[in-house]
Image 1 (spheres, rainbow, N blue to C red):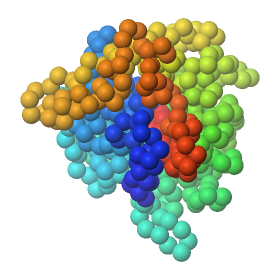
Image 2: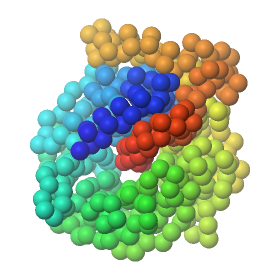
Image 3: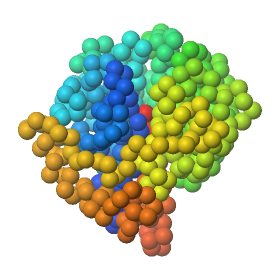
Length: 440
């Protein structure tokens, strides 16, 4: 089902977006991943692979999709372990790199479609697999199962019981202060009968308790944004919706039994970052800008109009993904001042800062797949046309492609009236896939 959606959208993009790169996606940043042991190492997930810096964001190198093991409309979920291993969950496997991203090995498991990864405080990795099984008179059924690795991603074994087969799982999170507490967000049914569900376990998945999460009209699914590091009963949930439809940010203080609304958003909330002490948060999206504030405040404050593609926080440093028209592809600000002053953000990554494929030994996946592809990638990204400081004035004729914070459907809508149907398909698929990966 998901592969069919991806293929359909790739075809639609080929028809309506001649300015997009070869895999049918506009260049965009949409995730920041930190190393747990090296403060100077940071990864930025982009729609054309993975960017890595190991010198505190002074320089950046590229790992192409093919080297990692995927292509197309997929924003994988990544975790970096304490040994430095990079683990990725893909729509057809789990893969791991133990040499900084040069080579990638497939991890053999009993499942193939992995949609989310998370880590326990002890370093164990929890992977969520959920895929279409078959269709019955009552509707579609799914195979949803957690997998656990306690040996630095060398092996993964099933964790706990399978979920109800009528549920399609969407995201997973472990309560840091109570690792046996696991939350999984899911949906049941389709179209007007779609129901949001939070599935909760207090014994590491041996038993599951199902708790309803009401979806508003046009909302598609709930996704776990975070679980408070100190309060296992407090979790934050964002909703996804059809293109250009409102979404919400919710919080539960009783383990997903009830919710209160923190924000009504105009569009997708692609970024969320919770402060380490759990007292404040930042959230944002391309339509709503950056908002923040204390959890106990009456309302979140609009901090800036930054077109947010992702948010991540380490200590008091807030990372944001945005677009060149807003001044950077990835930038940082003091989290303590971002809520009230909107930053100011310092650019840490421009497209022109990408120094090519990551330097790897001959024969590695990156050396074989990425070095040659970089020549074409430079053209696809418009880097051959850029000079001086990246920004709106440098966009040139490729400006639409460089405005990476805008949704693909909004970039293509004005090209031709005959393309509206294809754009709708593309926008729905892009938001679905990006929503599933938005928290990472």
